[in-house]
Length: 267
Image (cartoon, rainbow, N blue to C red):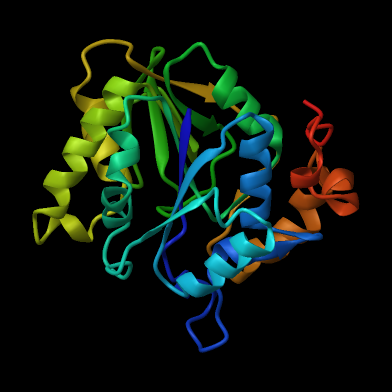
């Protein structure tokens, strides 16, 4: 199993001044988001990890070095990080083409490690995570379901559905669909218009074109998480989400990286 963490963006809705840092370096409790991501992935024995970087890539590299993982975690440069996030996924296409299952995840999410457990433990080979407690408005990416199948995946759905939930921004792909996704992102980046789009667009194309139950979802409505886009999200993450995480005391007391028996994640 390999992993791609998308962390190249500016996160301009949180600020864009000279002191602004990548969202992956926001600190909650004693750890940055990036430290949490890497610790949880490694706790599940996922050590082949690529991080797409662009804005202030030097700060992300410093954090990886601080964690003692500079020789293990690969930083994948995306010099075009101000374009669509599909370009970041394109930059990591060799991981998608590796012939192994791949976890794809946004870097700007604070989440309970049980979400990762549910994603990796699912019987669904190509799995999305869905929260039924969806925020209002166009900001959330919606996973739309009819019967037991995903029929749309977009901020502004265009197909009829029975119900919908919010996408967490974490995905698991088996080798075949991962390879197909790599092919599609190459096509997107080759188009002047499509390279400005978000990485979810080629995933949506695959979902809509699937004629089988190749793709599915796990419901994580009962678990705490938050995507961080706005200053209010930072406040909510610190005051509401962080205290509910199953790993809160653990991260406060010691780093997962230092624990060879992985006592850190209690699932």
